[in-house]
Amino acid sequence: MYGVFYVRGGCVSVDELLESARREVVELRERSFPIDLGAMGARGRTMNVPLASGVVMHLCHWVHVWQANVFAIGLAWAREAGRRKLWLAWISLRSLFATSRGRLAYGFLGRLNVIGKGALIHPSAIVEGCILGPGAHVGAGAQVRFSVLGAGASIGEQAIVNGSVVGDKTIIAQQAILNLSAIYPESFVKTIQGGLVGSESFVGGRVRFYDLKLEGTIEVDHQGQLADTGLNFLAGCVGHRASISGPVWFYPGRAIPNGYRIIQHPKQVVGRIPDGLSTTEFLVNQGGRLVTVAEARAAATRSLKPKD
Image (cartoon, rainbow, N blue to C red):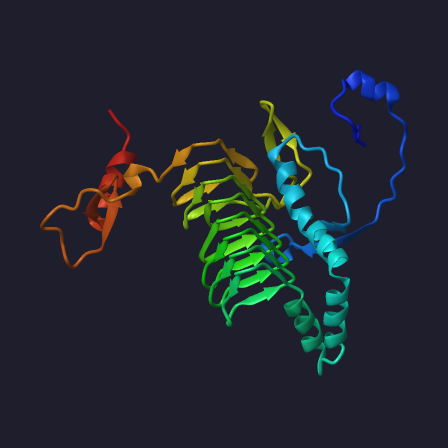
């Protein structure tokens, strides 16, 4: 599919590569695991995640970087399994003595973790099939499955992390939801599914990316034009050193450039609180000012009347 070359002894020109290139047949050893998207509202739709010992990808867009990180979880496990054959055999042997089918499955996955030096997992947390870097931390009640945590990464209390890559010193907030996403180092994230977040970025608690298109596929900007990803599940991309504080909603496939700082519209934030408002009526925000519901309705009625 792609012109891929392995060069020994330094760089050469593209023309020299093409002249000396020879066809090489590579045996593909890959298993694909379908992930059901029905729980997200897309009944009958799945997303295939491959598990292989190696991968070749054409990287020219942030979508490819996101996919490469998600695929790399399986690659990381294949590498660890190759290095720790005796350890893997011992875990498998212990699981054979489980007294029930549930204990067999979950007992095996619960032991199938690679835990770096100084990493801490709270006794009430569930960690299954994960690779934890040195000094990583998983808080109370958190659930982390089939993910890779970098050195010093922190998963907050009661957070849910599935099939994701979390960079060094990145913080995943309390009660966060992180599914099939990749977060670069030293960032803070509350919730994202199927997304990519750059380094030193902040994604606040009320920021939401629509991540599912029920009809058709998601398009992204590529070199000034819309390109079809062929995917119906994809959130978006947050650039390096960007900051987003909610409530803010984004369409699927949108990319926030590096360094952008996005906040809520000022008119949606109450800045003026007049004295003497009614204590028997409900109050609402109208353009940044607290007013009674009756006053807000009257203003809306006046705005609908035709002008002379």
